[in-house]
Length: 395
Ligand SMILES: Cc1cc2nc3c(=O)[nH]c(=O)nc-3n(C[C@H](O)[C@H](O)[C@H](O)COP(=O)(O)OP(=O)(O)OC[C@H]3O[C@@H](n4cnc5c(N)ncnc54)[C@H](O)[C@@H]3O)c2cc1C
Image 1 (cartoon, rainbow, N blue to C red):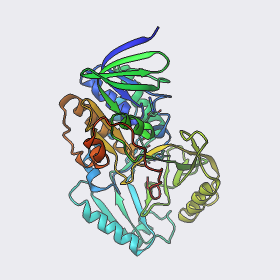
Image 2 (image 1 turned 90 degrees about the vertical axis):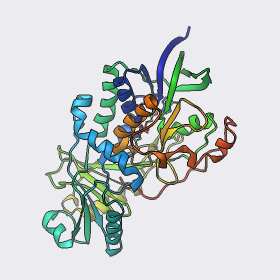
Image 3 (image 1 turned 45 degrees about the vertical axis):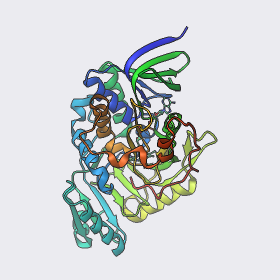
């Protein structure tokens, strides 16, 4: 016999995007089911680097990023834990004058958008951040950015949603979905049937199949950022570090471990899972030793990588389906969804309640990829584009 659930909103995918939307929707009084094929927060949202960074985002993401920026210091009140969020500042380094010019140009392009970027020359860096190698010519500092523990934050949102009354259904993959009258009929897990008036597609790297089901094929590929963590060390890094052009990012947690990324892993036979490449991990460690002399003899104690959905223009898809009323997409965060996810959750809840978002999201419309789908609504499956790996990681 199958179970049946009748709810206002079904959310496919319990990453940070789906979980934060679930919590916000429940706060508005909606009945919500949050479905995950595994455990909430076990994919990208729970295994990422933990960079809570606005600096470096394209200007069109900044209103959303600013909205999320206001949520991070309120985590304790919102989900009951602070998620080890630390407003340490984010320092983006320049290897040479061309990098420095790019940082200056970025600062001009986002002037007035609330980042308050400070450009720092070589001497200033030596004075304030003497633990950074001498070969760095300058940097851009965003004092309001920081970092947090993804394992705590993502599961924390799902747990808070459950406490608020959301049906959090783990190990319950959505197998099928179709329009059913004014709403949707979903089949999930072994025996669950759901009727939902609206649906959010926040299935991360797996979201393309759901978009395609409703005639909106998107060029969503998979990337596998890979991470290294050191043994606990004496306090060294006072800020979250990034590099203009990518290649390395690093932070130190309160226990002393340094978390470092900047390379890509490889998918396993089952492309839902991946592992770091040996050469990649070695490259990260060599860059670490060069950039941070105090870490030259640090032991790396763990390596991992995660599966992330990526769009060719590096912007996510956020907003209503253009073929199917009641369906809202939110996926394709391309290595940078952790910081903005709590803001995305609020926006998704507004879209469900009001049909519009108070934060501009037009740049993220699925329409920029699905022209043919809009011409032939419901025409069904096109093939996803060949997987392509977007640039280096810039977390
Ligand atoms: C190693 C790594 C480092 C990163 N570093 C940073 C960083 O420092 N800063 C930053 O801002 N971003 C970073 N990111 C990106 C960030 O983690 C992601 O953009 C963000 O977590 C995406 O959240 P999500 O909820 O969309 O996806 P996910 O967390 O992947 O969640 C999607 C969920 O959907 C579920 N799902 C899939 N199919 C189904 C189905 N059929 N039925 C039910 N559930 C389904 C999955 O099980 C999964 O739990 C990093 C990513 C990785 C992998």
